Amino acid sequence: MKTLTVLLTSLATFAALPFAHADGPLTISGVDYLGPDRAEKMDIYLPSDDYETPAPAVLLIHGGGWRIGDKASNRERSISNDLRENGYAVFSINYELNVGERDPQTKKLTLSHLAWPQNLYDCKSALRYIRANAERLGIDPERIAVMGGSAGGHLSMMVGATANDDEINQHGLYLDQSNAVSCILNFYGIYDVRNFKITPFVGAPREVYEANKDAASPVVYFDDELPPMFIAHGSGDTTVPVQLSRDLVQNLQQLGTPYCYVEIQGAPHSFDLHPEQFDLKPTVISFLHQYLGVPQKMQ
Image (tube, rainbow, N blue to C red; front, top):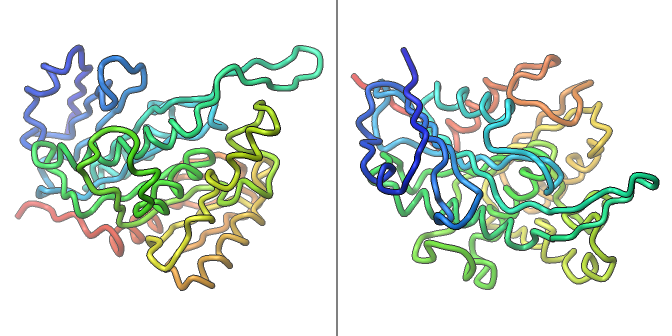
């Protein structure tokens, strides 16, 4: 079956697309989910009409150290297509990034622009955008997961853990929509930036880090309403040590939060659902089936 890809040139074009009635898989690139004045866009991957609507959905947040990365990188496209082939709609987003330069001699990074907390607000806006457009997209607004790797894993945990945080949820767009997610999929993300050298504030003045480290740590918001979490981490990760995810598991156990932890022997820091050491796809799909529901094929 062929996939139809549409590159949007205007909001009017977007509004006219018959999303829920595509004959095959449909990809819509460059959606202005933050409005036309923002450079950051969304790519939408809708399943084929082999699957019933409304479909469950996954908000996908790319990694890249809060400074680089893209919604249409090889990793994000691979994950999006894997999930779409199994009946899940995927919304892969760009969001505001840090801007900085490295000293050519010392290699020290100095930020000229700090994205926090706008990067989180963008992710929240993306979630609410999906709900605001659920009917015409053919999406079930009650079945939305959030997923990301590395910096995207951190932001995914932030999105999932702050569903009931009134201060954070007053920012961004589509504020009449719910901030809830059904589950979180965190690939080698940092759950506590207070105790690790890699943070959203690398390159910012120390006082900026001190003022924001609590607010930017997902663990601060963990409570007994935290959604179920999938965690994947490679033992060969030299960027974010696997011990951080082991510690995260202990936190979830203490809370009684349902979780699935997969530690992949020898896997490096960044991978999709098919690292060479272990095929994650069946385990991820099984987790989604349990907590997001099984997409139903047309009879």
